[in-house]
Image (tube, rainbow, N blue to C red; front, side):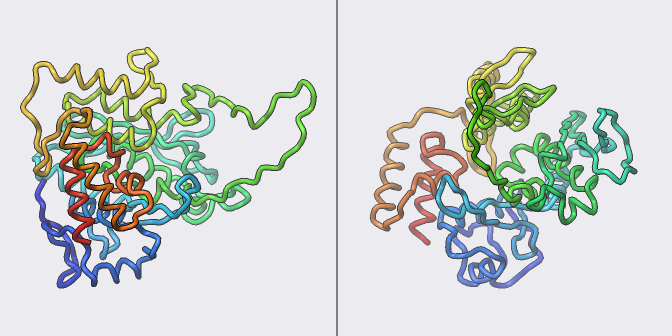
Length: 365
């Protein structure tokens, strides 16, 4: 992929390929877009890298950094987002640069009885949508359930575009899932606004009452979803990762999937591969070893050699030590969490080069 940034802005706001930190003018503009003082330097550095890698321009509203309060982190966590148009721009550009065939099959919508239709005419929202992306003759299909992505008010009723155009919204979510399967290298680490809309849903109140004798505790376990394998309450994300690993013949893709799954806490979840239930982490490691023989030439992605996930080396330990020493000197409270957000994985699971690069960015900032 070329490193030129296709921006519509110029002058002081233009993002340079060799840029390592945001300029004062860029920071001021980002602040006006809603990025407040709670954002960390690591999150800003990661966002800059993502803008350069995806070639999306934050100043033309092609990509955003959205903050949401995270109770586990105890602070507002900022997550990169784009619209479905941003995904399409990246997919078209990658296909054109690699001279690959790229297209879609007709989108499908499903009603509550399980019947699929190629056009949705009902006043009621569809139960699901399915989109299939074609890349070099391979099919990458994804299904998005309306109930998992719909944005609602406190009464659980759809709001905004989810109320007025439900079929289009759930189809965008399915398209984003399919595109991320078809272009895992280029779309990793950024989600569409349609997918993340449900993150803003009000949390339901839990009213306490005494459990009657002989009655099970309704909060102890949730109901198992019908027709799916329950995986700690969320089966689809882990299964999506496993499906991509099964279809690819690129060991670098499997390594990226492992890092992504580790960052999202999916490695311990159960997936189905060839009718066998396996732990996702163990399957990805086995799949990587399977593709390692005979060993192909190392793949270079944007100047970085993609290798298997490895245990920390002496250089890795030195990089971690230097990063933590810098954090202590600068009074950064939780450098491990900030580095996780910036690099997309814990320090133990990223390369020493990536840690040194993050340290250089923080030092310059």
